[in-house]
Amino acid sequence: MRELHLEGRARVIGDDINTDYIIASHRKRDSLDPQVLRHFLFETIDPAFAASIAPGDIIVAGKNFGCGSAMEVAATAVLGAGINAVLARSFARTYYRNAINNGLLPILCDTHGIGEGGRLTITVGDEVRVWDADRRVALPGEPIPQIMLDILAAGGIVPYLRSHRDFVI
Image 1 (cartoon, one colour):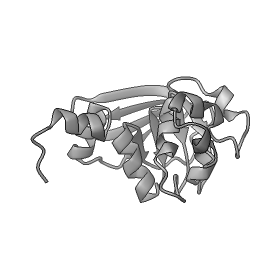
Image 2 (cartoon, helix red, strand yellow):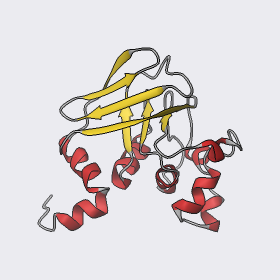
Image 3 (tube, one colour):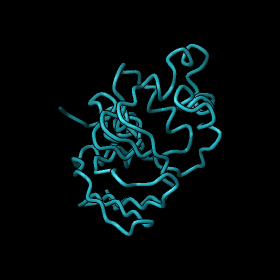
């Protein structure tokens, strides 16, 4: 994978954000279309949040992001809103894998001190680096295994497997 570079505005939320906070489970009965679900992102936390999202925004969370149920739609709704990355101090394991499998970049790093609306730059290559331009601070991220970087570069697990028909486990 060549180096990935993202820039965006920090959208700060708290700790223990479960998948029902990301997208209420009753919403998936109405539609699984990410372009529909984007309008309901984080509605139980802040009903105005979805309308305030701009493409390229970056979710900045605390610990245990994506806990709760394993519904994959919680990752696709974030992507549908034009958000390509989530920074968190920790992720629920299932959400982390759902993010990778859907092409959403999950970055493990220390998010303390990142302010709402702050300007962030993420660089993923041999290292994972987050630059907080407002505080002028570099935040090292946890490395991402190469296979996961390859899946992200392909746009998710389905495009990855389609392009690697010879994939053997």
